[in-house]
Image (tube, rainbow, N blue to C red):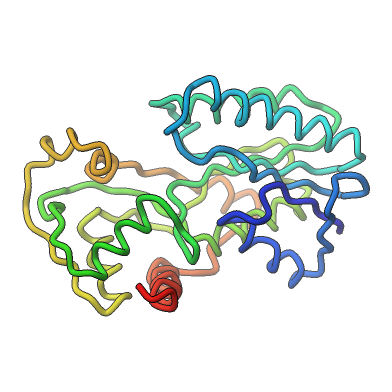
Length: 258
């Protein structure tokens, strides 16, 4: 199958491209002639204006799907976000609006994936900052947090994307994804420390005060999602466990010199 990937040079695209080739698919540089299109090229955070989020994540996604249909693609896989399930900010709202726009299309089969926070080699933003802090032995005020957060290793996301490219039953569905059981922020920090060979240095601090610090706010809250639908419908199982995903992420981080 010929597959065109938007955003192929990014964090997720750079992991997806070799996996598609390994499974016998051919990457297409253009939509024309592609059998399937995977749309990754969105703004991946909320630190831009609501208007810019809508322009790129909603209008840009609708435009990409329409171009894919005109080019003759049979399948369009859209990487949405778990934040579209119950939006609480402009980013989640834009993702949900994009999903609704795609649901109106009939000229191409649409499959939507809703990942939570994705980590893995080449990760950026908050997860990279957490890796760096733990590697450098910086004390972190997360010892008193009692929450449950779903996570997703990039290799598991890539596996699900390829499945949605290939599986006829994926069409018309939106699927949440996780590595499996959710973890608390302290457990995540300790697991990262174990993978890095650097014990996480955690101390207690009132979570309600951490909520006032934007970089910490998300880490204090629970965000648990249910991925039973894709497991039931498509038989998907994450090929990498949580510890293995962290081990591979930590190995990449050390290779970069920490």
